[in-house]
Structures are given as C-alpha cells and as structure tokens.
Amino acid sequence: MQKKLFSLLALLLTAVLFVGCNTTDKSESSGAQNNEPSNTSNEQKPSEDNTAGEGQETPTSNDSNTDTSTSPQQEVKYVQKGVDKTEKASESKSVEQGYKMQQLPGFTLTQEEPGKDMLVSNENDEVFMRIETVDASQANFNDVKTSLQDHMNAVGETVALTSEELSAFKNVTNIEGYVVDFDTEKVVGVVFEKDGLITKLIIHDNDELDLTDAMLNMAATISKQ
Image (cartoon, rainbow, N blue to C red):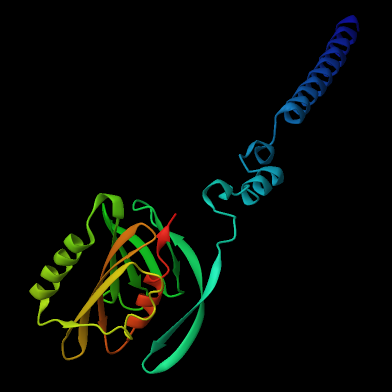
C-alpha cells in the first residue's frame, strides 16, 4: 500500500515538473521571438525623408558667373540679298583686345588667337569677320594698310571699295577697303582709324548668306571699352 502511494506521488511530481518546464520553454521561446528584430525592419531602405532630400537637391547658383547687367542695345541697319533690314544688337566686349561693339543676333564673337577675334555666323562658320585692333599711339595707319593690301593681294585680284560701300563707317580719321570676288564667295578687307583705334577687318562671305553689309555695320560700332 505504501509502495503504491509512493509511486503515485512520484508520478504526480513528475507531471508537475514536466508541465512547469514546458511552460518555461514556451515563455522563453515567445520572448526570444518578441525581442528578435524582424527582417523587414532591418532592410536598408531609403527613408522618405532621404528620398525627398535627393530629389530636391538645391541647384548650384550660377549668379557669380552671369552678367546680370543689361547690355546696351542699339538698332543696326543693313542690307541682305537686296532687302533692307533693321535688328537690335547687343554690346559685346573683346576678351583680350580692349574694344566693344554692337553684335547682331545670329553671330558669335570669340578669340581666335592673341590679337585676333572672330565674329562667326551661327548658320555657317565659313562666313565670318576677323577683327584685329591696335592703339593708334602704337601703330601707323599706313603700315596696317600695307599689311592688309599684302594679304588681299595674296588672296586674289583686288578691287577698291567705294565710299558708298563703306558708308556705314562714320567719323573715321582714315579708311580703306578692298574686295576679291569669286564665283559665289568673296573676301573683303577693311582698315580704318577711329577714336584712337586702328582696326583691320577680313571678311569671308558667300552669296547664300550675303552678310557682308551686316558685318560691316557691326564693325562700324567698334570703339574702346
């Protein structure tokens, strides 16, 4: 009888211990699951704030590189293919030569090399005007004219431009001009002295664009900066 009672107590004690251990294991397992970060929360995804920051990056200001002043403008009249035209030109300044001029739309003024600039047609870069200026106190007009004549004679048979063809140039001290005509192209050379500057021009033009008069009228506005 005592032996059976002892066996029964032993079975009850074993059952109690088993239930208690099982409960503890489940609690620990549940706690571990609750404390372990989920894979979703650990993924490296850009936050909405970061994404917005990338999309709204502040552009670099170009104010320091932009001339905000309004360039002086004036109307320039010229003839192209027999048609009288008038357009507003904006002031451009030579980077190296120290002169300024009124530049029509459709042209770009660039430095070709030290002492020489190029005013080039945006439509055809084979139509252009080379510009060289020198202070009248540092050069002689006749010497510059001789240099121009030598260049034009090397191009071809020259013909002197008339005073009417050079009428765009006002208040000049001295002026000479020449042209070499080809079938559909021509080369024009002009040298003039005005406002203490001696300017030499070489123009390359063709019949398709016929921009010689436009370039001469722009050149007539050349003055010291």
